Image (cartoon, rainbow, N blue to C red; front, side):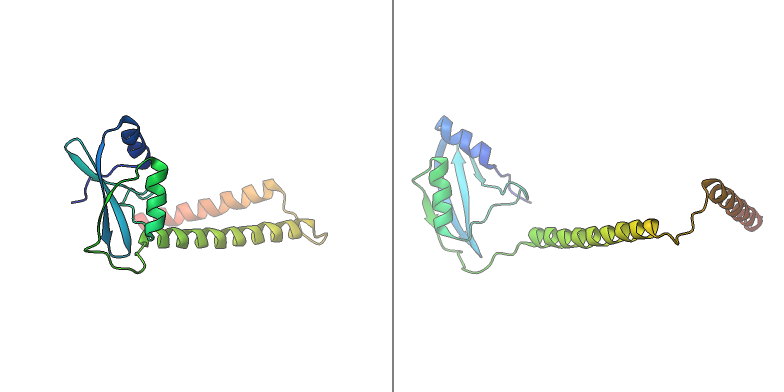
Amino acid sequence: MTAETIDHSTLSRLVEAGAVEAVHVVGRPGGWSVVIRYGKAERPLAAQRSRQVRVFKRMDTLVSYLRDVGISKFDVYAVDYAPGTASRPDRAAALRRTHEAAEYDTWFREQVEEAIREADDPNTVWIPHEVVEEEMARQRAELLARLKGEAK
């Protein structure tokens, strides 16, 4: 079960309202997370895009973030802290999609450039639209006849 989280804007509003009772910085493998206590609830801070618990790799980055939000006093629990790189499979997948999109974009642009070169070539043979329509109608009729023959 995943814990309910709060996002940056909710945290900012809670701080502005003076509703934050305690802030706990919790060590974990690969970095630090933040747990906010307000009222009877305790919620971890979530990353904006992934909505997963946000992990700060560096303590100084975390401290700067909290100070910018208006929090200057917090507890630190370093029992489970283990330095190293936090796994970011969501970012790896996003990077893979970015590379795939770039490859497709390159391929597509090459296809367009080739089509323009071919269209500009004076030796290109142009086929009238009506001839193409007639050929497609003939092919369609042959395919339908084959399909009807196979359906029997």
